[in-house]
Each structure stands twice: as structure tokens, then as C-alpha cells.
Image 1 (cartoon, rainbow, N blue to C red):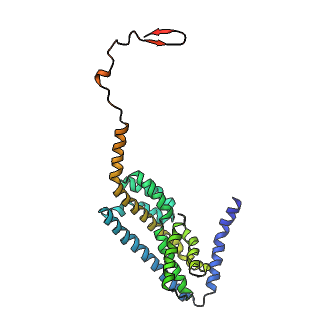
Image 2 (cartoon, rainbow, N blue to C red):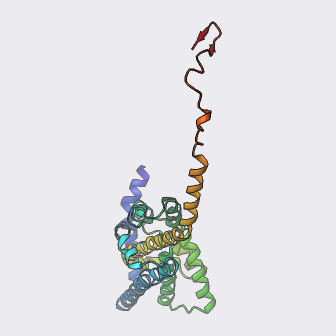
Image 3 (spheres, helix red, strand yellow):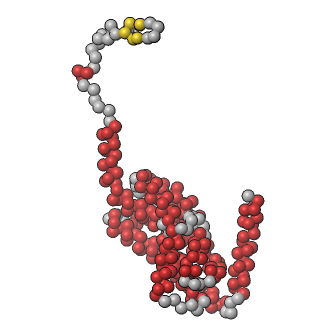
Length: 265
């Protein structure tokens, strides 16, 4: 634990010097700052389009329910995701919102949401693809159509392996960069603003998990209800007929056998 403690204390200084070294290599800081600002706007715009337009539309098409009501009811989970930047830390709040406010079956939420918090990182996949293209443009590296496809596929697969903790996307970002021959050390360019983007993409990840759980609950509710009814009928005790009940006094002459004595009832 002492080694971990030392690493945690010195990590901010190491990151600062990584960024500072990359900044000092730049010829024109104003150009890089403008490019970084446009990158930030592009990522946030893409996340908002995905989270506020695509996912609600998908929810409406599959469930025929009001997506605005759905968004309002899971607002506490989205705010928790924005504050913690962790899908795993937000998981209890997400489950509570879906079960208590939206009435989803707990068997659906307790299966879909933990799986989604682990592998469903749609916001992270979108961010990694845009970040790779941004780093290519900063290095004046021209990408062809095949490399764009490679970035899209690699970003999707890498996001599945990302942990549900803050800044996990930066780790898998290296895989995406190396898949198209971009320098992995240029990840330091986006560390400066990644704290903000990480919170927004985590909220989008949680929204995607919740949307998936809502859609699955819609199509499994009837089958789950039928299964519950069948279980109740299967384990319900059979009623005793009136003629099967022994008459009063019919067991007066019965005996309880014991190894040592016989006791009349």
C-alpha cells in the first residue's frame, strides 16, 4: 500500500511534466489551442446528439413510450454519472431509478445494468474515434477510408474492454492510436480537457445502459409475468377434500409405538 500511496501522490506531477513537454514542442500554441477547442466542441456535440436524439428516438421506436418522461426519471443517475465519471459507481443509483421510478422488473435491471456498466461504452467509443482523428490532424497525418474504418472498429472493441472508472478511456485510447500508426504519446494532448469530456461520456454510457434495460423490459415483461403465474400454480398446495379429513375420535384407539413402551393416544 505504501508504494500505491507514493504513486498516487506523484502521479499529478508526472502528468503535468508529460503535458508540459508536449506543449514546449509546439511551434504555435494558439493554433493547437484552437484545434483543441474545436476537438472539445466536436466530441461534446457528438455525445449530445447521441444521448439526446439517437437514444431517446431508439427508446420511443421500441417501447412506444415518452422518452422525455424516461429522461426525467433517470436524471439522478445521469447527474451521479456526471459527478463521479464512473459507470460502476453510478450503478446503484441507476438501478434504483429504473426500478422505483419507471417500474422496471428487478430481474431485468439487475442483469442488464451490471453487464452494460462493464461493456456498453457507447460514449467512450464515440470519443476515442474523434480523438484519434484529432491527433492525426495535429500531426498532419492523412487518413484513408480504410483507416477510418479501422479506427471505428478498434474504438468500439477497445471501449468494450474499458473499465467503468474515471479516465479509463485514455488507457484504451493507446490501442486505437497504434492500430493506425499514430504516436501513442500524443494522448497527453487531450488529457488537459479529458476531465470534462469524461464526465459527459460517462453520462451517455449510463443513458445507453438505461435505454437498453427499458427496451428489454418492454419485450420480456409478458414472458416474465407468465413465468411468475406458472411458478405460483406449480408451488401452490393442493386443497384437501372434505372426505379426506379424519372424523373426530377416529384415532382414539391408535398407538404410538416406541422402543420402550406403547402409549395409547
